[in-house]
Amino acid sequence: MDNRQRFNTAVLPHLDDALSLARWLTGNATDAEDVVQDACVRAFKAVDSIRNSDARAWLLAIVRNTAFTWIEKNRPKTVTTTDDEGLFEQAGLERVEHQDSPEALLIEKTDSEYLHLAIAALPLAYREVLVLREIEELNYQDISKVLSIPIGTVMSRLARARNLLIQRIGMAGKEKAGAA
Image 1 (cartoon, one colour):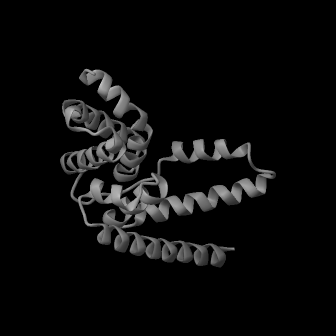
Image 2 (cartoon, rainbow, N blue to C red):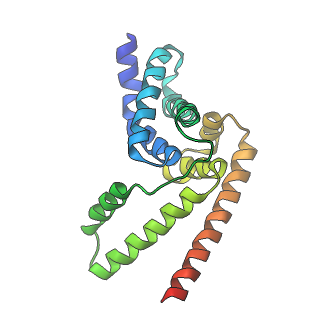
Image 3 (spheres, rainbow, N blue to C red):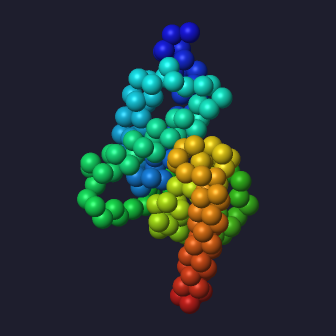
């Protein structure tokens, strides 16, 4: 199998996951596309080193490292995350089919926005572990490989991320209730 076929087989099926992780790390879709493009170039150059059983974790590790390199080069030292409104609109439109009432849709969309903002506000070390586990659905061992940290650290960061997320959502709920 030549490198192109190997790349197509091992990497291309995981591009959506790579783009999703890059969006979470960079904060918007345009920057994420740049990161994934750079990561694909790196992956193609190193495609000989991949084992097909680890292709997803291998690619996500490349995306993560590429994102950090890209952020270091293209962003000021203080990173400000912003909403990707197009993503919210798309998510809202996709859910319309499944909702019974406009009120239920509005409540779900608002809750989804609060959750997205709460995740985006987490410190990067916690956010990336949470995204890899809960959104990308990687197991602890794969997260450990992607982040190059021990499994115990994965578990403790994930627990801390979940606690911080619950606290942030709780605060947002109190603010929402106070405004009503």
